[in-house]
Amino acid sequence: MSVGSILQRVNGLFRPHMLTFLHYPSHTIHTSCAALAGHNKWSKVKHVKGPKDVARSQIFHKLSMLIRIAVKEGGSTNPELNRSLANVIEQCRNVSMPKASIEAAISKGDKIKTSSLLYEVRGPGGYTMLIEVLTDNSKRTSSEIRHIMNVHGGLIAEGGRHNFERKGIVTVSDKDQSGSPITLDKALELAIEVGAEDVQEEEEENEKMMLKFICAVPSLHQVREKLKSLGLCLLSSGLGYIPVTTVELSDEDMEQASQMLQALKDNEDVVQVYDNIA
Image (cartoon, rainbow, N blue to C red):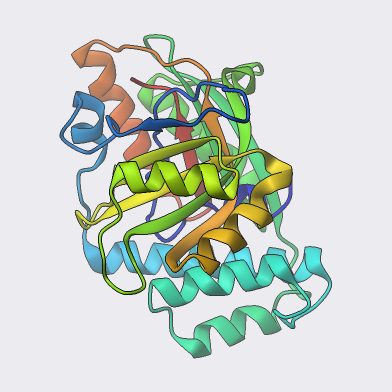
């Protein structure tokens, strides 16, 4: 698994839930906004805020691990020669990560052995979660993930990945570099122009809005650079998983899913969690 797969939305700290992605021909664009917090029960449940100082510490830790993976995979500590590293550094700056911390992580990139893993999980009610982790001790992490599953009714099982599609995801602010708001209609026009397949509008945990442009994996760099050249404020870019179908949960199952998600958020090795909960 490349660093691109776990690069997406670390600085938002686990806001991966998206609407069902519908595959459209290249000339058709789909826009979706119902993932906004407050528009459905799951959005309300899973966007419960935690202590900001703890969240920032977790974000910096995960970004440091991403930097090390990027250096290891890209073979260079120079972001001009290592695109993955440049993308992570961009995310670090977006969350005001201290320069000294960024430089320290870069210097350790080729010295610390870190592995990226993907856990496929089934939960009560039939939903699926994909859990991406970065760890320097896979046995420890596996034990911790299994403990979380045992406590919250989840089951590690193969096959969950089939409920998702692998896509490129470019996340931007809902305001361009001049401060002008970007409406969904405008985002639709931009998506057609840059070659994206889908546009999704979501609310961040700090209640700011963001737009996610979904594209085919080979088109990620092209879409990213075109959006940047059009004056949009990039927040992150990388590869991720978009649900093919979503699952409706009862209130009881949704509460249990929320508790499991929170436990996963609190694990320092977990970088991203994708779900197909409606």
